Length: 264
Image (cartoon, rainbow, N blue to C red; front, side, top):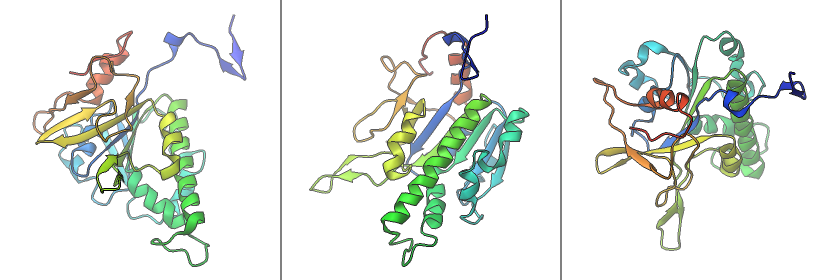
């Protein structure tokens, strides 16, 4: 007997397909774009970063990437992001033209949200947007993220959102005590709840490391895919010439396993 609740089929837990739903954040220039390029299958790359596509010209996965440069568009594009058919990509996902969607980057998109947010607010500027401007910025950003997450989930596609790290919270002496991804201020926690993976990529003494759990002042990380009891961070060795392990290989390991993984 087929069971349905609110029109949705009831399934056993193991029948629900696994997908990557990842926020990748870190310092500028550390390799976030290169890492995101290792997402599984054919990728639709939504680029809001000026020159953000340059790295992809040399990425081993470049033949599996189709990109759209939205960095020169008007801030009015945010209105498209706030629609249920986010940026009009539903048809492409429904027709299985892509396996993964890459959103690059949340930080640049936030700037567009702010520009739209201050529209029509008297005396509001980018430098002094007012409380109303900030509130509208966060609302636009949050709605876009919700739409992306829901749309990719609807068609079982992977989603990778790239973000820079914020300037951090400091103590009275000016020491940084907490850093998190720049994803919409007060909206950050509610967006984080909807994501299954939040990873940090950083450069530590010349070595790139991916962190899956909070470490030191880096606070917002989590994973349902990685066995955090055995692996909280890993050195990521990947080159443009030789490639290496990345999201695609780890996803396959996780998909074919009945438990959480330990990335190699």
